[in-house]
Length: 115
Image (tube, rainbow, N blue to C red; front, side, top):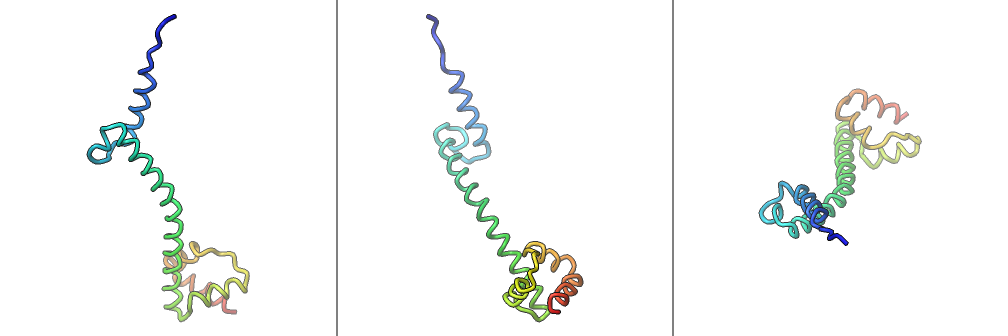
């Protein structure tokens, strides 16, 4: 029976991990064990922050919308209630973009909502 050398798979795996850890600082970019731990942690942070990004963007849209509404003499909470009562389906992202890019269109939209 011939001998099977197992170095190829292991070295491929290590190369893959070290290639993924490229750009890390100090020992984490060149030592397999440290690189592996760093990649696991980086993956956890990336997973967590993809969800946190959605929260921060929503907060930004609300702040922008509130600022645009205050200029026009309206409160954010009153506007949201009015929107729910009128069964308007526009989300905060679209509304904040409208308020930022086309204030005149947003003002007309607000006038239509008030009626």
